[in-house]
Length: 248
Ligand code: PGA
Image 1 (tube, protein in one colour):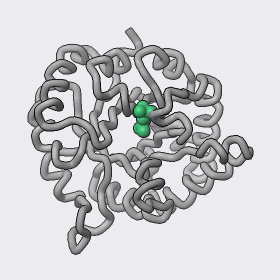
Image 2: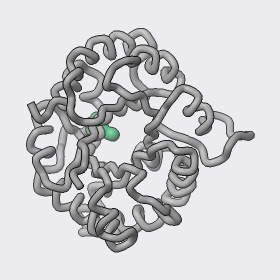
Image 3: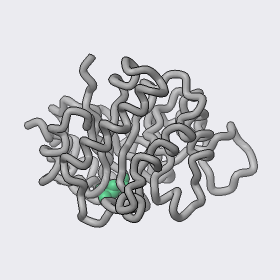
Image 4: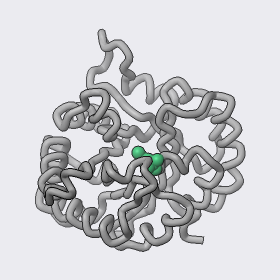
């Protein structure tokens, strides 16, 4: 079965309600004919305004995190119910910046992923190696752990999205080459095949992320195992539409 490409933006801690609305208004006509799924994962406080701004368009609004409890004393966190109340479908889990700066581990990624799935949200689970891990030849070992621990207990892997984001490529302007990205994503798909069965693994959407932009998106998207992109910097500009329209 053919996998439908999925291009998602990750605004990180950028934009305001005002600038976000403006950008979405600019993007709307530009992505009207997109054949892929499109999402923008925005800061939690902007979700209501951006859902309203994106109404009637191809753009779905996603979140950047979700907690693994239904509710409770978790200052600063956001619950699945809060996201669902606004029709949020996608949620980024385990972004390397959360792992690096906010103590996210494979174990908490696992809890968040299971809870998101239980709540019918689509997790975009981020995995990827650091520069020293790649240079030490540990890329596969790191990914194997991130996938086996992070996805432990998942019953239907086709309900989630994987974003392969080499940490050394994020926000650095250093994109993985088409071949590097394909080779690593192929490894991820093979690993999913071993855990969840080849048939299921072949249905999982796997994105590439890390300095993907309007110039390099075509080459990356032409790779057989790359089904989409998770776009940081380049999702903050109308240029994002060029990536969404990579097949034009
Ligand atoms: P970047 O970020 O496109 O700015 O490199 C990607 C990401 O972190 O998701």
